[in-house]
Image (cartoon, rainbow, N blue to C red; front, side, top):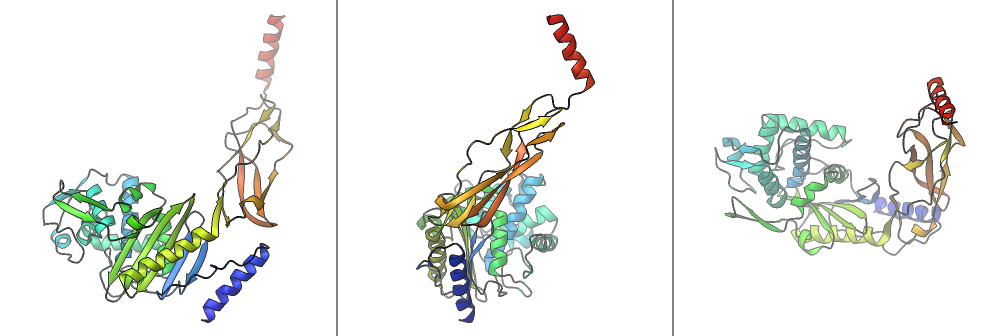
Length: 377
């Protein structure tokens, strides 16, 4: 209760700083013992409850497994068409599975689909062996990647999430790895499947994540359950350019986790929006001693800032650019910035870059133009 009260105070201070009232839904109530809501684009935490409590994550573990699969695909270690051979270890995993047989082969794409949709443990181990040589080596890679992402309260001892000693994480760390996985938009091709099949239609798949069918804007991501972990979920959804990650751990029932995840997502979508208005035209910058007199500044990225709902109209920005720059100017060279504020508080900044290169005037250039002028006359 003390932590909850502290959260209310923080919300109140934040609201005062932005000169806006505390909204009625400023403190969503969830039944699970551990939860967190995060803005996917910025990583901003919008709500938390015991978010750093170490807990067994069950099959939510597979978010890291899928992240390493996507990274292996990106690196060219495997392709979606790679035929993955099933070992005895993979075929004997038990739990959620698609009943792979030793010696059977299945494409990496079909295995990824099985992991995302029905949480197939046998496919996880087969993919781990294909990528890293063994499940043990893959688990080491999982822990290394977790450290790189700053998941300081996580240790993996399984690529499936089946109950095992020394296998734990937190709601905050799950949100972090969920955000990393969602950097691969193509994963949504699989995490948003409600029903499908593999083995040429012979084996049906039905998603364990009910939100994929029943929640507007759902994009994934992964359910989990074991006796020690309880009912767990990392749920992702997008509405009106706002993408959120809701993590709930330790639910007493399956319905609890889905209802709590919806509560968090509804809170986020009702209380926050994304400011995306492009700036008005930006004047070119004078180039001294250049082959061209000016260079046009362009934004390094489009504006996309998390703000309280309805406050988009109150966002202002300031353009900072020098009066001139000395040639040569490289394409993409930083020229200045646009700084965005909301009621006097900074909400972000975007670099302004040179649209194209501008060469420096040389004696050769001057001589060439002088010759052109002489013969033109």
